[in-house]
Amino acid sequence: MKNISKTIIFFGTDDFSLVVLRSLVENGYNIMAVVTKPDKKSGRGQNIEMPEVKKYAIQNKINVWQPDNLFEINEAVINLGDGIIGIVVSYGKIIPKSIIDLFESGIINVHPSLLPKYRGPSPIETAIANGDSKTGVSIMELTPEMDAGPIYGRVIHKLSGAETRFELRKSLSNDGAKILLSLLPGIIDGSIRPTPQNNNDAIYCKLLSKNDSNLNIEMPAKRAECLVRAYLGFPKTKIDINGHNVTILKAHTSNEFKTPLDIKFRDGDYLSIDKLIAPSGRTMSAHEFLNGYVLG
Image (cartoon, rainbow, N blue to C red):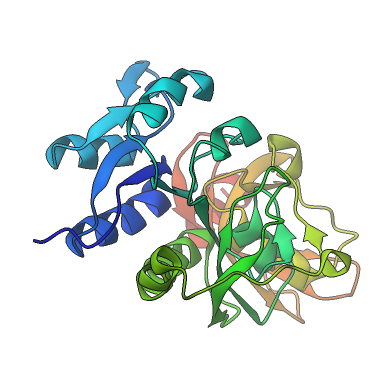
């Protein structure tokens, strides 16, 4: 396929990044290099695991750069000459101003929220956790300030109130790839100019940790159900049932008590657990847990 762009250096790491990278390659964009995080040890066997974008880059004979410190790529970027464009999607590291300045045409960032709402590291999880009716993807010019750069364009994604973190990540990665492809030609030729964000409307989301796992019965039951969907995978939601600490995988709200797996919250409603991970580590249905741990 004919190359239709200036040289692009792509910054990304995970499956969200991969969707956008694949879309760029399949649409003829010239990806000179993929910058991604170093390989890491994973699992009980501590096997070396490569980032998703690295696997794809190798398969497609794209250069892979995995600096421990981004300053290590300075010389390589400078040697590529003027007009290099950077695109960053879920890279996982802050890109300093000195690196941004190496790109005469700037760095484009694909961010999964409707900026200036949810600047920061957990916009997808936060939108679900807060029970929002919509979210989206913003295409912005990267600046040293977190997610504060001017906006080239954005797409709105309506939320059903039932999606999990994994489902929304997949949807927004596809949305992000599509809107980036629609805007990129105009960004490259200068016909599309970014519009500054209103910093007064900025809302920040936090970096999630294991400390966010435990549910608090003082919150509304609906908030607890949203957290189950938002934190699926990490940091996960946990609660104590009859002395057993369990991880909740699926739940719904109810206004009546039916089984010991219906937990009453502050508002008087119940969180009814449908699927969980038992203390043994086994994934099981509510019925199996009741028979094995509560009634058995």
